[in-house]
Amino acid sequence: AALASCASARFLAAPAAVKAPAPQNASVHNSSVHNASSHNASAHNATAPKKPLSDAEQLEKLTVGLKAVQNLRSQFTTMTAGEEDDGSKFANGALSEELGKKDSKVWATLQDMLTKTVATMGQMKGKSKDDQKKLMSSLEHDLDSKAGQMMKLTGDVTQKQYSQDEEYLLGLLNMHREWSLEQQLNATETFNKGSPVIAELVKHHDAKTPLAAQLANLMDAAHSAKKAARAFIQLLVSVRAA
Image 1 (cartoon, rainbow, N blue to C red):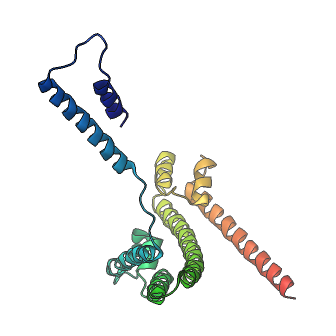
Image 2 (cartoon, rainbow, N blue to C red):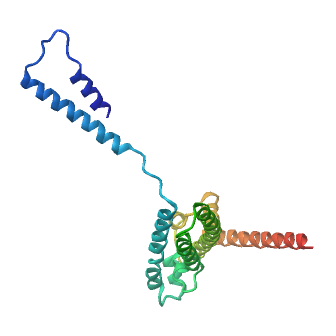
Image 3 (cartoon, rainbow, N blue to C red):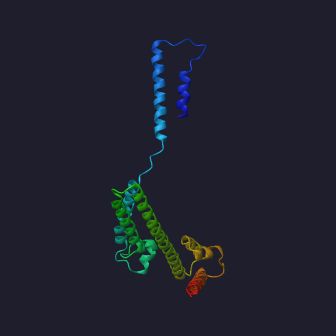
């Protein structure tokens, strides 16, 4: 847009020392100014802010998105069908395993969100603006609650994935006791994707002791800490309830 403005100004400003151009040049001049102006108009339209979506349009867009996610369910179910052994859960990962369950809480929560959204779309038809705002506020509150449930679910799945990574790595290290320290560390680094236990092993390991034994000790310590934390929380709950 800036270049077009400069070009337009350059064409419009006639040099003082130059005679007025002949008529045929004037037509070229006018065409150039017209092109520059058209370019400015196009640039303005391209950067013009988009009109905000109405409540109905937002609901429709949300419904389409939720349905698209729901349509992925069959893919995860097919992926994990007939894979009940321990090896498959390591291969697929905790999230895929969860999404492949017929009774997965993730899909149930998504279905609740979709059902609520579609119902609200129907209820808003013919309502006043004030009533529509109330319906949107109610839906927003409900979806926020469902989103909180989803966050907890994914958090639990993440912790489960960490535990699976630790178990698989421990089995791998025990199977290959002939590995050098470098080989053990290379295998450990492969699974260092978020588990605090594995991260601790990578950062602070004893080069003279097999990593399998060190990992087992770290896993036991982490498990004991989790049990203590759960017991503490249960104690707090019982005290508040008293």
